[in-house]
Image (cartoon, rainbow, N blue to C red; front, side):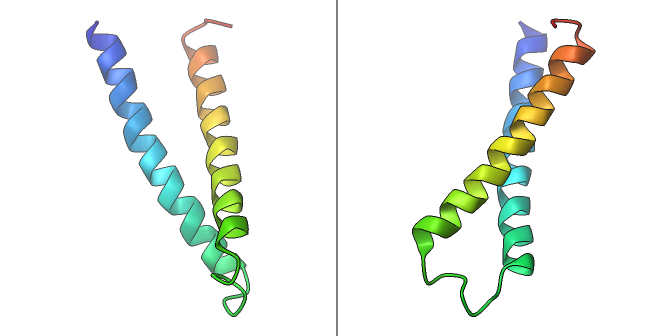
Length: 68
């Protein structure tokens, strides 16, 4: 049970850092004059980066615990 709570805690912290990190990365890479004009597209880009790195973390976790 403690291991599950630790994993959940790491997932939450990692997810928050990824979400804000993805947003900061996109702001720095995206043309600042265009950023914010289409908030739906901006959110989808941030969410795409978040899911991509979240999937990498999940795969690394499963491989490290020998679940797959």
